[in-house]
Amino acid sequence: VWIFGYGSLVWRPGFEFTSRKVGFIRGYSRRFWQGDTFHRGSERMVRAVGGAVGAAVGRGACTWGVAYEVRGEQIAASLQYLNMREAVLGGYDTKLVKFHPQEKDAEEPILALVYIATPQNPSYLGPASEEDIAAQIIVSSGCAGHNIEYLLRLADFMRYFCPQAEDKHLFSIEEALISILPCLYYTEESLEET
Image (cartoon, rainbow, N blue to C red; front, top):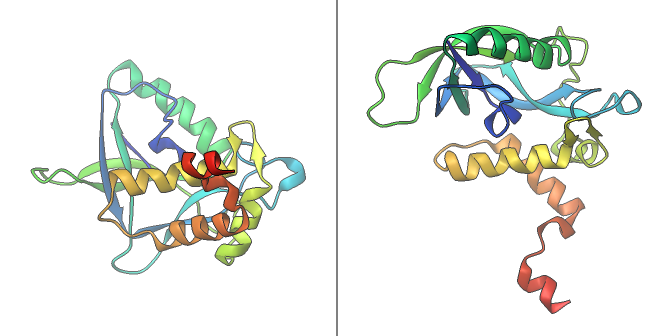
């Protein structure tokens, strides 16, 4: 079984796997339109943006991430863990999608399970400006950590593992966040100068 992740699963799957591949799925775009009162938010911060959301969109859309291959005993354990993490606590639906590996010699697309947020789930927040989303991210944290970490790790993943891919939504939110909190990006040289 292959499981595709496009949010925190790209750096912290939380389950055992046999192999992993970087690649993309078509027909969905990553959007920060999902609320979270557990992983990256709290009951007091219901309006907190919890992370990436695969929103069905028109032609040409694709979402980059990582597909994990699970085998044998890994299958039941990983699905039980992910159903709690993504479906019960996150409000995501499961879908089977075609995953396209990044590798140049990749064969046919691989059928993979993905957790997708839809407008029908109770934590769905809907569209907002990148500035508003960045402002929500700054004040949101939960049991999995601060939402700033989520955004920056995801942007780093895209930058280093998928440099050919465009994710204007993600990078616009990162830019808005940096403009609000410029101190996040001090270099060693700038720290030495101060």
